[in-house]
Amino acid sequence: MRLDKFICKSTELTRTEAKKVLKSGEVRVNGDVAKNAAMQVHENNTVTIDGQQLTARGSRYYILHKVVDSICSNVDEGYPSVLNFIEVDKAFDLHIAGRLDADTTGLVLLTDDGRWSHNVISPKKQCQKTYRVWLRNAIDDDKLAVLVTKFAQGLQLQGEDSLTRPAILTRVAEEDLLDEQCYKSEVLLTITEGKYHQVKRMFAAVGNRVVGLHREQIGAIVLGDLAPGEWRALSPDEIALFS
Image: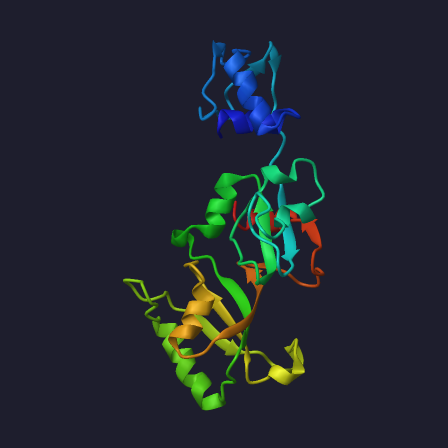
């Protein structure tokens, strides 16, 4: 962990304040003065400020139901950051493990544990993400069967050198529809990578257009009945899924 981040997790200092303390020479790591904010420290290091030993707080893990017109960023840029919805101390020290576009709703994971979030988003981990997709053009059963095969084989997206990884496309069962009028145009898509605007580009590649997008699941973590804008801490079992 970066030294400035360790200080923030051990005190009430902001990242800016931590860097000022470092410059002052008050911080020591294993007895030696440390001024480099990017210095990596570990559990077995002794970090002190003015002789007081620091102990980092435990990492935090949350799930949020992202609403439309909010952004997965640590700053407000046109739209409010999703971090505004997390009512915890130092919410803006968290980061998003798997971003969503401003117009996309659904499951967002937030943490201050970099290793944990890496296990969520790293392409090597091939973590499944499931999206509910509303399409401009309805898909009949014959067309769906063709698309299921195409998505499973991989699609060539504009500007990409390689095909997308195999994806799972299914129709939403009638009893599970969020919009009863959308039986032929409401589908579920499960992917294991996160290219730029990937879901929208995949359907564009087969001549359709996404008009609504909602993430329901990451790995075995399910959004469930969490209402739009609501959040909760992940359970120990959920945290362990990516530890």
